Length: 508
Image (cartoon, rainbow, N blue to C red):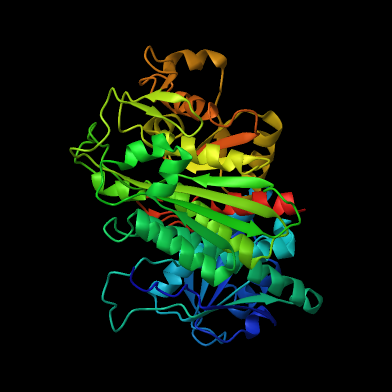
């Protein structure tokens, strides 16, 4: 693939300095909803501006509502050309997600104005009640994620505006070292997400199964985790009939990508992350409609999340043994493609009747989950753009979560909430198994429209046996068609932060 566009801002620094003394192109301060008189750092800036912020509040031109942005020109009263006043919403609802979102929105706006050096106060700390290091990491993540641009295949304009430096201003000299460490953590996690976004946004003629494997191997070389690539012959010897059945219609051969981060002393992996890697999904013989089929290049978003998480965990030197398994295939219609009615034998030995070749993700995950389980992983998390039914159920706000173990589900949910990535559990009642029983095989690959996200998860449950397992269906959250907060158009890199948080928590 073409060279990646450098992350912006290129430099994020902590500076112990009075906010009114900052010299740069712009300064960001905040306001909580309902505040009648600005205080703290915002109050100091207001006084330097002759009460301009207070005047905006009194004239009801700025209320502090979440997402509000108001630029104020300083006309020489401060060493910056403009101050950007951002709304943080109600103080009692201030959280790290609000900090990420407002930072992303603010810096994109300032970049459009040509600001290259920006200073910011630490949103959410102090009056917001957030711990300073957590807020610093959130500002860092919001800045890098919000300023992301996918420009690999574009000729860059000569007058392209670039945000080069963000300075986080504090008055607490004693906190400087801990805040700098928080910036480092935030950058590593955010760059893991950016790696995933790059992979999701890449065109499918570049990111074939072999291309995805090459990208994983390159990340492993860069960040110090191991990467083993299995090819068709090796998968055949392992008996991966479900995975190979999906792949057999494509001229691009499959790959099984096996990642390992040995950060702990455990002989066996504490957890395995399994990511769906369909680099392009036509639906196979059960061909999808042409409208929006181009978005099916993102059907490997689960794989991208796993690669991004491994890059971050390795850079953080997380003391935990983590396994990653990515089945990479292309689902194409051809004279050699799997047909509806075919019966495949999975690596576990279970036979599967193919009802719909567009329900292919669960087939490749079946063999990948079996591989991870046989490697001895103590716990499993799979991430997949698996079902349109999950999008219907949860929309684009939350990913679906399914599990065979309540304690492990609770742990994954806590990690996802801490990471700022919302999930919602859906039921796994035994009665749903009736919908995927086959008359001619042990199981069939779809139970129809009713409860489609659940029956897909029930299918996967047949291949994890008693190993604690959570399935994350990210079909509704893997991409966005608009800019909002720290999300920009295209792949979101969802689940990277959740997987990193899971790894860090297991390390602790």
